[in-house]
Image (cartoon, rainbow over all chains, first blue to last red; front, side):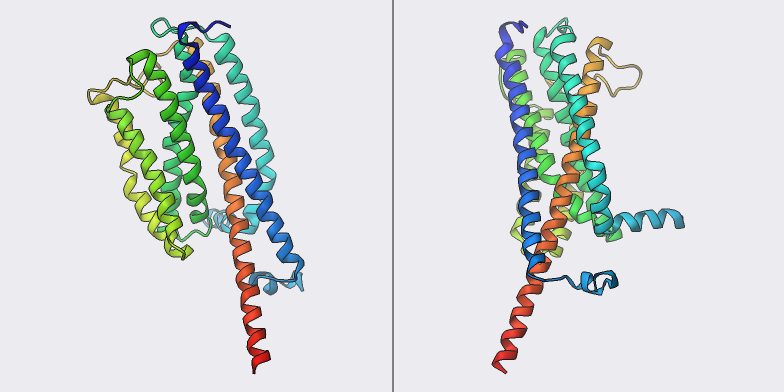
Length: 59
Length: 255
Protein backbone atom coordinates (compact mmCIF):
# COMPACT_ATOMS: atom_id res chain seq x y z
CA UNK A 1 0.00 0.00 0.00
CA UNK A 2 1.92 3.01 -1.28
CA UNK A 3 0.39 6.36 -0.40
CA UNK A 4 3.11 8.36 -2.11
CA UNK A 5 5.07 11.34 -0.79
CA UNK A 6 2.28 12.44 1.59
CA UNK A 7 1.81 9.06 3.28
CA UNK A 8 2.86 10.53 6.64
CA UNK A 9 -0.01 13.03 6.56
CA UNK A 10 -2.52 10.34 5.61
CA UNK A 11 -1.43 7.89 8.33
CA UNK A 12 -1.25 10.67 10.91
CA UNK A 13 -4.88 11.63 10.13
CA UNK A 14 -6.13 8.07 10.58
CA UNK A 15 -4.02 7.62 13.72
CA UNK A 16 -5.42 10.82 15.30
CA UNK A 17 -9.02 9.75 14.60
CA UNK A 18 -8.43 6.17 15.86
CA UNK A 19 -6.67 7.34 19.03
CA UNK A 20 -9.16 10.10 19.83
CA UNK A 21 -12.21 7.87 19.33
CA UNK A 22 -10.62 5.05 21.36
CA UNK A 23 -9.95 7.43 24.25
CA UNK A 24 -13.52 8.77 24.05
CA UNK A 25 -15.01 5.25 24.09
CA UNK A 26 -12.73 4.23 26.98
CA UNK A 27 -13.65 7.36 28.99
CA UNK A 28 -17.39 6.76 28.54
CA UNK A 29 -17.18 3.05 29.39
CA UNK A 30 -14.98 3.58 32.48
CA UNK A 31 -17.09 6.52 33.67
CA UNK A 32 -20.25 4.40 33.27
CA UNK A 33 -18.72 1.55 35.28
CA UNK A 34 -17.57 3.93 38.04
CA UNK A 35 -21.04 5.52 38.31
CA UNK A 36 -22.81 2.14 38.34
CA UNK A 37 -20.45 0.97 41.13
CA UNK A 38 -21.20 4.12 43.16
CA UNK A 39 -24.93 3.62 42.62
CA UNK A 40 -24.70 -0.02 43.71
CA UNK A 41 -22.78 0.98 46.84
CA UNK A 42 -25.41 3.57 47.75
CA UNK A 43 -28.20 1.08 47.05
CA UNK A 44 -26.46 -1.44 49.33
CA UNK A 45 -26.56 1.03 52.22
CA UNK A 46 -30.35 1.13 51.90
CA UNK A 47 -30.59 4.74 50.70
CA UNK A 48 -33.62 5.22 48.41
CA UNK A 49 -34.70 8.18 46.31
CA UNK A 50 -38.10 9.68 47.14
CA UNK A 51 -39.40 8.51 43.72
CA UNK A 52 -38.28 4.94 44.53
CA UNK A 53 -39.94 5.06 47.96
CA UNK A 54 -43.17 6.29 46.37
CA UNK A 55 -43.18 3.34 43.98
CA UNK A 56 -45.48 0.67 45.53
CA UNK A 57 -43.53 -2.09 43.80
CA UNK A 58 -40.50 -1.16 45.94
CA UNK A 59 -42.33 -1.57 49.23
CA UNK B 1 -51.58 13.74 18.82
CA UNK B 2 -52.54 11.90 21.98
CA UNK B 3 -50.51 8.91 20.79
CA UNK B 4 -47.54 11.21 20.08
CA UNK B 5 -47.76 12.69 23.55
CA UNK B 6 -47.82 9.24 25.10
CA UNK B 7 -44.67 8.19 23.23
CA UNK B 8 -42.93 11.47 24.12
CA UNK B 9 -43.94 11.17 27.74
CA UNK B 10 -42.72 7.58 27.90
CA UNK B 11 -39.34 8.54 26.40
CA UNK B 12 -39.12 11.54 28.72
CA UNK B 13 -39.08 9.21 31.68
CA UNK B 14 -35.42 8.45 32.57
CA UNK B 15 -36.31 4.91 33.73
CA UNK B 16 -37.91 4.11 30.36
CA UNK B 17 -34.97 5.77 28.61
CA UNK B 18 -32.47 3.63 30.52
CA UNK B 19 -34.35 0.42 29.64
CA UNK B 20 -34.73 1.35 25.96
CA UNK B 21 -31.15 2.62 25.54
CA UNK B 22 -29.72 -0.51 27.19
CA UNK B 23 -31.41 -2.59 24.48
CA UNK B 24 -30.50 -0.21 21.62
CA UNK B 25 -26.86 0.55 22.49
CA UNK B 26 -25.25 -2.84 21.60
CA UNK B 27 -26.98 -2.89 18.21
CA UNK B 28 -26.03 0.69 17.43
CA UNK B 29 -22.40 0.17 18.48
CA UNK B 30 -22.15 -3.10 16.51
CA UNK B 31 -23.64 -1.55 13.36
CA UNK B 32 -21.22 1.39 13.70
CA UNK B 33 -18.24 -0.96 14.13
CA UNK B 34 -19.16 -3.06 11.09
CA UNK B 35 -19.80 -0.04 8.83
CA UNK B 36 -16.59 1.72 9.92
CA UNK B 37 -14.57 -1.48 9.27
CA UNK B 38 -16.10 -1.79 5.78
CA UNK B 39 -15.62 1.95 5.20
CA UNK B 40 -11.93 1.78 6.19
CA UNK B 41 -11.36 -1.16 3.87
CA UNK B 42 -13.03 0.67 0.96
CA UNK B 43 -11.24 3.94 1.74
CA UNK B 44 -7.73 2.52 2.14
CA UNK B 45 -7.71 -0.44 -0.28
CA UNK B 46 -10.45 0.08 -2.90
CA UNK B 47 -10.98 3.82 -3.52
CA UNK B 48 -8.72 5.15 -6.31
CA UNK B 49 -6.52 8.24 -5.84
CA UNK B 50 -8.10 11.58 -6.75
CA UNK B 51 -7.09 12.88 -10.20
CA UNK B 52 -5.83 16.17 -8.71
CA UNK B 53 -4.93 15.46 -5.08
CA UNK B 54 -3.68 11.90 -5.54
CA UNK B 55 -3.60 9.67 -2.45
CA UNK B 56 -3.89 12.68 -0.13
CA UNK B 57 -7.65 12.61 -0.80
CA UNK B 58 -7.78 9.55 1.50
CA UNK B 59 -7.80 12.01 4.40
CA UNK B 60 -11.29 12.96 3.18
CA UNK B 61 -12.71 9.67 4.54
CA UNK B 62 -12.01 10.69 8.13
CA UNK B 63 -12.11 14.48 7.72
CA UNK B 64 -15.56 14.82 6.10
CA UNK B 65 -17.44 12.57 8.60
CA UNK B 66 -15.72 14.43 11.47
CA UNK B 67 -16.76 17.79 9.99
CA UNK B 68 -20.36 16.67 9.46
CA UNK B 69 -20.61 15.29 13.00
CA UNK B 70 -18.99 18.41 14.47
CA UNK B 71 -21.92 20.40 13.07
CA UNK B 72 -24.53 17.70 13.73
CA UNK B 73 -23.36 17.50 17.35
CA UNK B 74 -23.98 21.19 17.78
CA UNK B 75 -27.45 20.82 16.24
CA UNK B 76 -28.18 18.07 18.79
CA UNK B 77 -27.04 20.39 21.60
CA UNK B 78 -29.18 23.24 20.22
CA UNK B 79 -32.29 21.08 19.64
CA UNK B 80 -31.96 19.59 23.15
CA UNK B 81 -31.54 23.09 24.59
CA UNK B 82 -34.72 24.15 22.81
CA UNK B 83 -36.46 21.10 24.27
CA UNK B 84 -35.30 22.09 27.75
CA UNK B 85 -36.24 25.76 27.56
CA UNK B 86 -39.57 25.38 25.72
CA UNK B 87 -40.94 21.94 26.66
CA UNK B 88 -39.02 21.37 29.93
CA UNK B 89 -38.34 17.85 28.71
CA UNK B 90 -36.58 15.98 31.56
CA UNK B 91 -34.07 14.31 29.28
CA UNK B 92 -33.38 17.34 27.08
CA UNK B 93 -30.81 18.77 29.48
CA UNK B 94 -29.21 15.33 29.84
CA UNK B 95 -28.97 15.12 26.03
CA UNK B 96 -27.49 18.62 25.66
CA UNK B 97 -24.91 18.02 28.38
CA UNK B 98 -23.95 14.62 26.95
CA UNK B 99 -23.60 15.82 23.33
CA UNK B 100 -21.31 18.82 23.98
CA UNK B 101 -18.04 16.97 24.78
CA UNK B 102 -18.65 14.45 21.99
CA UNK B 103 -19.25 17.28 19.52
CA UNK B 104 -16.08 18.99 20.75
CA UNK B 105 -14.08 15.80 20.14
CA UNK B 106 -15.39 15.45 16.57
CA UNK B 107 -14.65 19.16 15.95
CA UNK B 108 -11.07 18.72 17.17
CA UNK B 109 -10.68 15.69 14.85
CA UNK B 110 -12.06 17.79 11.97
CA UNK B 111 -9.57 20.59 12.68
CA UNK B 112 -6.55 18.28 13.09
CA UNK B 113 -7.25 16.13 10.01
CA UNK B 114 -8.01 19.33 8.06
CA UNK B 115 -4.61 20.73 9.05
CA UNK B 116 -2.92 17.50 7.95
CA UNK B 117 -4.76 17.70 4.62
CA UNK B 118 -4.06 21.41 4.24
CA UNK B 119 -0.27 21.19 4.59
CA UNK B 120 0.40 19.07 1.47
CA UNK B 121 -2.38 20.74 -0.57
CA UNK B 122 -2.06 24.42 0.43
CA UNK B 123 1.47 24.46 1.82
CA UNK B 124 0.32 25.47 5.33
CA UNK B 125 -1.23 23.70 8.29
CA UNK B 126 -3.39 26.72 9.05
CA UNK B 127 -4.70 29.78 7.24
CA UNK B 128 -7.23 32.27 8.62
CA UNK B 129 -9.72 31.19 5.99
CA UNK B 130 -13.49 31.67 6.57
CA UNK B 131 -14.19 27.90 6.74
CA UNK B 132 -11.27 27.05 9.03
CA UNK B 133 -11.89 30.04 11.27
CA UNK B 134 -15.62 29.35 11.62
CA UNK B 135 -14.95 25.70 12.57
CA UNK B 136 -12.40 26.91 15.14
CA UNK B 137 -15.13 29.21 16.55
CA UNK B 138 -17.45 26.16 16.73
CA UNK B 139 -14.78 24.34 18.76
CA UNK B 140 -14.40 27.33 21.11
CA UNK B 141 -18.19 27.49 21.42
CA UNK B 142 -18.27 23.84 22.52
CA UNK B 143 -15.54 24.57 25.09
CA UNK B 144 -17.53 27.61 26.26
CA UNK B 145 -20.67 25.48 26.77
CA UNK B 146 -18.71 22.88 28.77
CA UNK B 147 -16.92 25.53 30.84
CA UNK B 148 -20.12 27.49 31.56
CA UNK B 149 -21.95 24.39 32.73
CA UNK B 150 -19.14 23.20 34.96
CA UNK B 151 -18.71 26.65 36.53
CA UNK B 152 -22.26 26.70 37.97
CA UNK B 153 -23.06 24.36 40.84
CA UNK B 154 -26.86 24.56 40.57
CA UNK B 155 -27.63 21.89 37.94
CA UNK B 156 -30.94 23.44 36.87
CA UNK B 157 -29.52 26.97 36.47
CA UNK B 158 -26.45 25.63 34.67
CA UNK B 159 -28.69 23.75 32.23
CA UNK B 160 -30.81 26.81 31.44
CA UNK B 161 -27.89 29.22 31.00
CA UNK B 162 -26.00 26.74 28.84
CA UNK B 163 -29.16 26.20 26.76
CA UNK B 164 -29.46 29.96 26.09
CA UNK B 165 -25.81 30.15 24.99
CA UNK B 166 -26.27 27.06 22.79
CA UNK B 167 -29.30 28.58 21.04
CA UNK B 168 -27.49 31.90 20.46
CA UNK B 169 -24.48 29.98 19.12
CA UNK B 170 -26.53 28.09 16.51
CA UNK B 171 -25.77 30.99 14.13
CA UNK B 172 -22.33 29.39 13.59
CA UNK B 173 -23.86 26.47 11.64
CA UNK B 174 -25.04 28.48 8.57
CA UNK B 175 -21.83 30.53 8.80
CA UNK B 176 -19.78 27.31 8.47
CA UNK B 177 -22.03 26.02 5.70
CA UNK B 178 -21.78 29.14 3.53
CA UNK B 179 -18.22 30.16 4.49
CA UNK B 180 -16.78 28.29 1.48
CA UNK B 181 -18.46 30.89 -0.78
CA UNK B 182 -16.61 33.78 0.93
CA UNK B 183 -13.24 33.85 -0.84
CA UNK B 184 -12.22 30.59 0.83
CA UNK B 185 -9.32 28.27 0.04
CA UNK B 186 -11.51 25.38 1.16
CA UNK B 187 -13.27 23.46 -1.60
CA UNK B 188 -17.05 23.96 -1.90
CA UNK B 189 -19.61 21.25 -1.09
CA UNK B 190 -19.15 18.15 -3.24
CA UNK B 191 -21.97 15.93 -1.97
CA UNK B 192 -24.80 18.08 -0.56
CA UNK B 193 -25.24 20.39 -3.51
CA UNK B 194 -28.14 21.03 -5.85
CA UNK B 195 -28.02 18.54 -8.72
CA UNK B 196 -25.73 15.52 -8.54
CA UNK B 197 -22.66 15.15 -6.30
CA UNK B 198 -19.42 16.52 -7.84
CA UNK B 199 -17.52 13.42 -6.76
CA UNK B 200 -17.07 10.16 -8.65
CA UNK B 201 -19.00 7.14 -7.37
CA UNK B 202 -15.75 5.24 -6.68
CA UNK B 203 -14.82 7.93 -4.15
CA UNK B 204 -18.36 8.70 -3.03
CA UNK B 205 -19.38 5.23 -1.84
CA UNK B 206 -16.52 4.73 0.64
CA UNK B 207 -17.21 8.23 1.94
CA UNK B 208 -20.93 7.50 2.42
CA UNK B 209 -20.18 4.22 4.22
CA UNK B 210 -17.65 5.93 6.53
CA UNK B 211 -20.04 8.82 7.20
CA UNK B 212 -22.93 6.46 8.03
CA UNK B 213 -20.69 4.36 10.30
CA UNK B 214 -19.29 7.39 12.11
CA UNK B 215 -22.81 8.83 12.48
CA UNK B 216 -24.01 5.60 14.10
CA UNK B 217 -20.94 5.72 16.36
CA UNK B 218 -21.84 9.28 17.33
CA UNK B 219 -25.36 8.05 18.16
CA UNK B 220 -23.97 5.21 20.30
CA UNK B 221 -21.55 7.54 22.11
CA UNK B 222 -24.33 10.04 22.75
CA UNK B 223 -26.64 7.34 24.15
CA UNK B 224 -23.83 6.05 26.39
CA UNK B 225 -23.00 9.58 27.60
CA UNK B 226 -26.71 10.19 28.32
CA UNK B 227 -26.91 6.95 30.30
CA UNK B 228 -23.84 8.03 32.30
CA UNK B 229 -25.43 11.42 33.00
CA UNK B 230 -28.66 9.79 34.24
CA UNK B 231 -26.56 7.56 36.55
CA UNK B 232 -24.56 10.61 37.76
CA UNK B 233 -27.80 12.42 38.68
CA UNK B 234 -29.12 9.34 40.50
CA UNK B 235 -25.88 9.09 42.50
CA UNK B 236 -26.13 12.81 43.34
CA UNK B 237 -29.79 12.45 44.40
CA UNK B 238 -28.98 9.44 46.63
CA UNK B 239 -26.08 11.28 48.27
CA UNK B 240 -28.39 14.20 49.06
CA UNK B 241 -30.96 11.80 50.58
CA UNK B 242 -28.20 10.15 52.65
CA UNK B 243 -26.84 13.53 53.79
CA UNK B 244 -30.38 14.71 54.72
CA UNK B 245 -30.99 11.49 56.67
CA UNK B 246 -27.69 11.97 58.50
CA UNK B 247 -28.56 15.55 59.42
CA UNK B 248 -32.04 14.54 60.67
CA UNK B 249 -30.52 11.76 62.80
CA UNK B 250 -27.93 14.16 64.28
CA UNK B 251 -30.67 16.66 65.14
CA UNK B 252 -32.74 13.88 66.77
CA UNK B 253 -29.79 12.78 68.92
CA UNK B 254 -29.00 16.38 69.89
CA UNK B 255 -32.66 17.02 70.80
